[in-house]
Structures are given as structure tokens and as C-alpha cells.
Image (tube, rainbow, N blue to C red; front, side, top):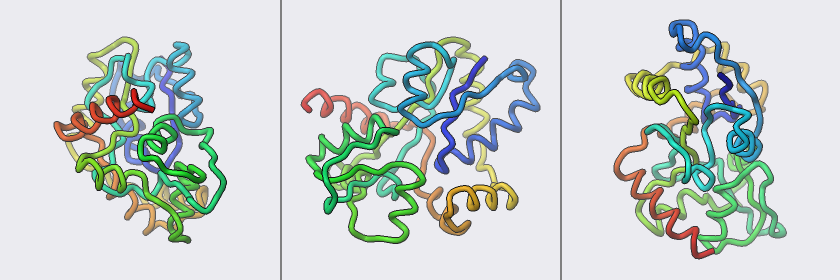
Length: 216
């Protein structure tokens, strides 16, 4: 079983959970990981080279998923447009590039850890999740945990992960800080902006996104 792994900070709590889940779950003992950026993982999943992954919501529509996602209730700090720069999509992204067109924004799109780092040092950007929320009063769902088979396993992962909050060990937090160049306190503050449960309002936001995406 191959799980597509996106090594952005927004999934750090989930990756910590999966390490523990893998040690304690017999059926997950053979799970391997393939690492890449969201757009590449989308392609790997669609090509069935990975069995499950957090797939960009724009690409996830046709696939089975559990009620886990990467969701911003309001602002997110890691999906930005910089209006002062020339129009440019982010090659690592899928949903965010579409969201930019839906919201009729011009400039350079930045996502992920590099976007978070930029937002912590500058104020000349538009937070796309915040603008979406202001416009539609709904959360924005950036990705969904999709799978090709073994629904029972992924429902178990959903249920176990959502049972409690997972504290990030200091050594892993330090590793993440060293890798990204983002202070530990800023990582923790950022993670407060991320929700993982695909609840009723998030589902409404997702349906709204799909409807708006057809128009661009």
C-alpha cells in the first residue's frame, strides 16, 4: 500500500498520527510513502501509482474520500496572491490556482510553506482563504483524503485521527523549523488555522467551490 505524502507544515499533525498508527495497526504495517508536492501527488494518485493521499479538492471530485481534508475556516496564511508581481500560477498547486481565478485576483500565486514564510515577513499579499470566506461566508477545502480501495482502513484512520488533538514533540517541531526556516511558535500559530474535519459547513464550502469552478 502506497500513501502519497505531502510534506507541508499543514499536514504535520497528520504525519505524526500516521507514524503512531503504523506502529499500532497490523493492516497498516506495510504502508509505504511516496513524497511530493500536491500537484505531483494528484497525478500519482490519478495514475494509481499511489493508493491514497490528500488530493487537491479540484482533482478529488470524482474520487472516493473520507471526511478528512485540509480546511481553512477563515484565513490560512499559506495560500496567497501577491498583486504587485506578474501573473503566475504555482506549479505545486491545483485548487489554489483555480481559486485565484474564481476570486478574480491578479498576481503571483504562492502556496505551502514558502507562502507561509512570505506572509510572516510581508503584508503585500491577499490571503485567498480569507477572501473566499469574506465573499461566501464558508470554509475553503483545499484537499481531501482520497483512496482507491480499502475504505474500512481509511475510515479507521479518519476516526482515530479526529478523536483527539496530537501534540507535536519538540524535536519534530524543531526539525520542521530547521527545514522551513519558520520559527516554532509561528508553526504552532499557523496550525491553529487548519481544520481537518470535513463537517457540514466545509461540505457546503466544497460544493460552492465546485459550482464556481465550472464558471472559470
